[in-house]
Length: 428
Ligand code: GAP
Image 1 (cartoon, rainbow, N blue to C red):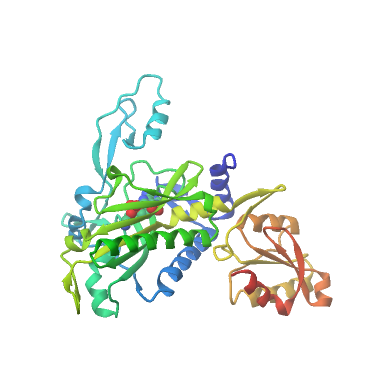
Image 2: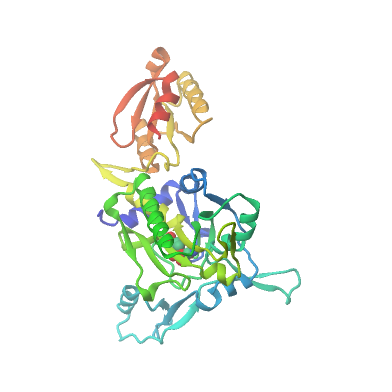
C-alpha cells in the first residue's frame, strides 16, 4: 500500500473541498466533519446508487425517512439504554480516556508516558447522545439523538404494512444521520460522533432456513454492490463476529471489512437480528394463511462516511508523476470539466460556455478557465473528474473538441454534436 496514504487523502480532501474539520474556525469539534462541495456530491452519489440498488430496483423493498428525535421509550425497549455501551478505561497518569477493547490505541498511549501507565478498571459507557426538548426551562424532556437509524424502521413497521402492499418477505430501507458519543473518535471520518448510515431491515418468516437463506443473499448483494462501484476485490473481506463482540440485538453477524491503511476495518454489518426488535416493541405481522407471528429481521447496515473514505482510498492513484482519483464515473462528483484553451479569447470562451451550459442540463459539469491546461488537468484529476473537454482554435473550424480521459490521459477528438451520446456511453 502507498506510504502515508491517509495523510495524502486527508490533505487532498481539504485542498480540493471534499472534507473539512467540523467548525474549524472555532478550533473544531472532536469527532465532527463537514463535507465540502466535492464531498457533498460524492456522498450524494453514494446515497443515490444505494437507493437505486436497494429500493428502486426491488419490488419487495420500500423506503422511509424517520425522525432523528424519537420518544425515549424507543431506546429503552430497544435495549440501547442498558446495553449500547463500550468499555471505558482512564489513564491514571493523564486522565485521558480510551476504549478498553482497543489494545493498539492503549499501547500507543502508554508509549507517551515515561513512567509505567496504570489504568482504571473498565466502566460501561453509554454511547447515546443526550438532548433536551421543550420550551420551559427546567422542565425539558431528556431525549436521545438516534444511535442507529434502525429503530425508525421498526417503530413504523405496522404503518408500512398497513399503508403499502408489502408482504413478507419484504424490506424497509432508510438513509440518515446517527450519533454516538464515541470514546475515541479517529482515523479521519472513520470513527466520528455524527455520521450517516444506509440500512435495510428485511423481514422474513421466523424459520431457521429462511433466516439463513436471506442472510447469505444480502451478504452477497452487498459485497457485489461495493465491487460494482469499483472497490478492488482483494481489499474486501467478510468477517464473522465472535460471540463477545456481537451487538445486544444480534443472533449472529458478519462484517464487510476494507483493507484500510490502519488495518482491516468494518464498514458494513450484516446482522441476523431475529425477533429481538419487533418483540421488544410488541409488534407482529398477520399472514392470511399462517396467522399472526413475529418476523425475523436480516439487516444490512452500512456507513456512508466509512464507505466514502474507502471509495477514496481505493481510487487514490499515483502513476507517472500524476495523482488522480480513479472513482467510478457513477460516484465521481463532476462527470466532465469544460475548458476554453485561453480565457482571454472571446470566441473560445463563448463556444466552451455553450457546451458547458448544454451538458450541465444532464450531469454535474465543472468549468475552469484559470491557468494553463496542465494545471486544470491536475486539479480535475485530484477531483476524480473522468473527462476533460478543451475548446481550441480548431474547434471554431471543425466543430469538434479534445476529450481527455482521466485514467489513461489519452485524448481524442469528438464532434460537439456527438458529445452527449459519447459521454452517456462512457459514464455508465
Ligand atoms: N443498525 C445496526 C448498526 O447500527 P453498527 O455496526 O453499530 O450497526 C453500522 O453500525 C455501520 O455504521 C458501521 O458498519 C459503520 O459503517 C457505521 N458506523 C458506526 N459507528 C460509526 C462511527 N462512530 N463513525 C462512522 N461510522 C460509523
